[in-house]
Length: 627
Image (cartoon, rainbow, N blue to C red; front, side, top):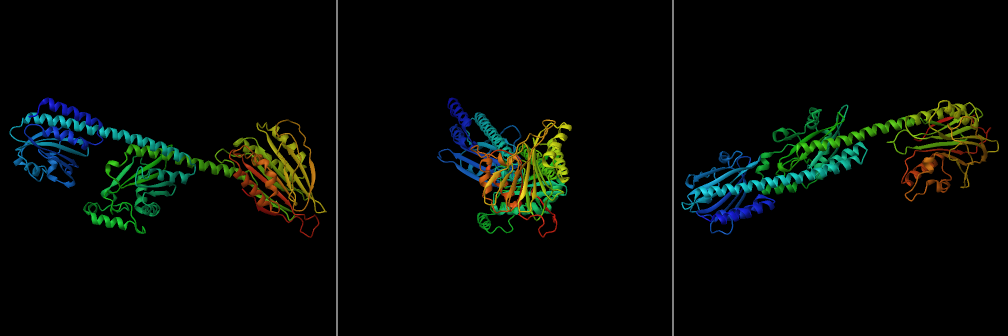
């Protein structure tokens, strides 16, 4: 037989090739040629089996031949199941004449060569299948030495396959880690619940599965939120399944709070919209597959995720419970139409579900907090403004960032015993519960005093005294303006400020002026008095009160909205109070690239109707304020 030195050199080259190989089949030339060079060997043949009896691959090389015979198949050979090895390789000698074609697909090739004995080593590659490497030898062969060489070659093949699997697992782990990291970034970048759920579905397809459905758990049961699929047609079908399918609804209800990911396939999907006709899939020939593929390009009516069609991979679905902070927030269902080897692991799905659940729960908590902030903010503002035929009043309030907390901006408008109207607007320093408490105290104190006829300066002084008595730890700014109609059709503006931005007056001719006021912040010193400023306004003149959230909105270049506010206000000449209030708010919001302060505006347009006109005395109406 071939010299030991020659075999040793060949074995060394084989190990080197194994360290570089990306698949076991790449070792074929380095395995077959040295074995075939062994004395007495006439044929080398290898097989690859799956599921005990499914022949996937056979490769044979005969002495004197330059090219191997390669057979790739998916043929079931039930009698071959008895050949399946255990954990250790098994070497067997069998006379070629004794080989049964029913269990030995190699037999036909062996009979074509001079060899009288088949020496074969069967070995396990992984949990899914096994393989064999054998040689046909004649009487001149040293069979014991041949068996040793087969065992050595198999050692290399197994080591190569193990290394490939290990590198594949490491690569998949790296890819999984990268996907999980990207998923976390994508999901955490949104605090909108439905958008977060949609991102969960989009991130997973096609990296994890061909399709995904996400449900949110509500008190009445699972609520469908999002679905996606690599096929647009099947995405529509998935959306319909997610919303209306009783089988899926029952499955999700049964899952309840089960933390384990469950995989369902084959008979477990019977009666479901994902059921495959597996037998039809296996039996479908190329023509049927083409027809099914063509049919799949129709209008999509009745498309069913998991239908056999031209896809020969049976459908598998998995359901993972989304649990965060000890409670179930929903579920994610993946639809797979891929080989089993490409299915994600349960550990990966649990990790993805955990990250998704935390992102969803954060979004839910943010939504609850946002609603709570907006609700509390709403209760700190008047639900209605008084309007007479003499005044056109409106307000606007824009929450800078609902995530932060309740802001301290407030406004109000009240009628006074003498027929005038008092406007007030203020801003408590900071946010949160304490700011909200001071906001309520300030607005209701000023409102009560002004309704009783107290002048603006006295009202601010008494509020300052109340704040000092309450030992308030925060200061606030405010401005109060009374609007008193005069017989000549003008109105007297009496304004008093406590450190607040000065109101603006938009005249009917389009000019804009600032009401000059000044005064100390409220809640700083014990005894403070406030001086009033008076001026007249004419018909169609408009008074605009606002908080610093409007003027301090800053663009990317650093300029404040305050610098262009007079020009923007002048451009609104001729519009009613509601339009002016809403327009200025939206302009400031669009202008700012930074800053998240709340914006409050209170706008009053004098109609020019003097007292004593043929009108019912102060026909008071209540209109809902803008929020």
